Length: 198
Image 1 (cartoon, one colour):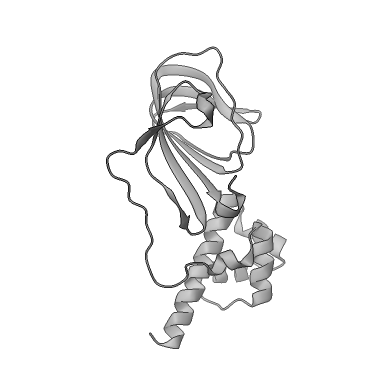
Image 2 (image 1 turned 180 degrees about the horizontal axis):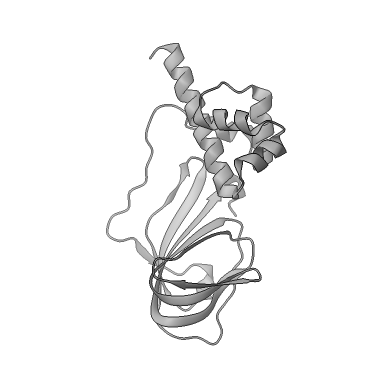
């Protein structure tokens, strides 16, 4: 492959990673650019892979994202990496079964863009007067497939029905507040950077 094409692919891969981790943090381009000491326009060009950022700029961006700079260069060669799970996953009881529910781990894995991702299908079929609260060092995406519930995140409550989603920092205390209409089927995707895994 010509050198110019390899450079273009590298710039594009680095830009995509910066955008991915920025969105995982829930940061706007303006906020990240300010933290890194660069203009929003420059960050936009870096994320699109249209310019070649200096090592100093990449160091500033990785520091602002809370990542080692080496993460931006991991797996930048042109190859695909994916994790396939067949058979509907496996039964599991995460969080010491604090929530009386069926949890099915649908798949997931680590090493793709330097993150570990675990998607769960959670089924709640019984009312409970003692719903637990969770807290862990990751990001979480919650999507209601069926049913209705009130979900708490910090001091906010969200009334969620089928089709509703919630994306949040899981280090903030969170969990179901009220099960309004049973059964409740949830897709929960837990994602954390490998260096933050515990």
